[in-house]
Length: 102
Image (tube, rainbow, N blue to C red):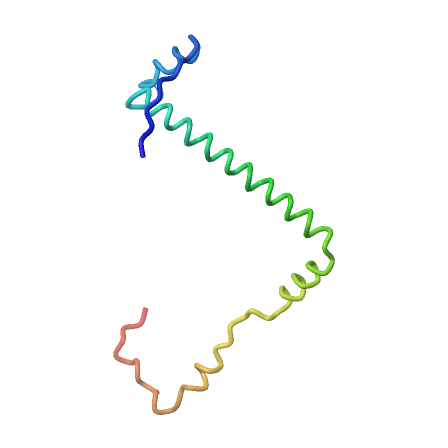
């Protein structure tokens, strides 16, 4: 969807827009589009930051949540390869001898 607008800029903004090539833009339009996209990203990041602060506050006040998080972090997450090793039998000896070593 494309929206076409007629905009009014003051002299300082017009002077700035007229230097679009100096800033590596193909046109004034692409310069404005880039500025809008940057503003959009900044506003979205601001919302994420505010949300993160809120979650931090909630976490700091919720002792039960802290305990659950702590207990989850204590679970042993090391992978156990014992099943693979138990599946190795004497008949497997030499199975990979034809493959070049690194």
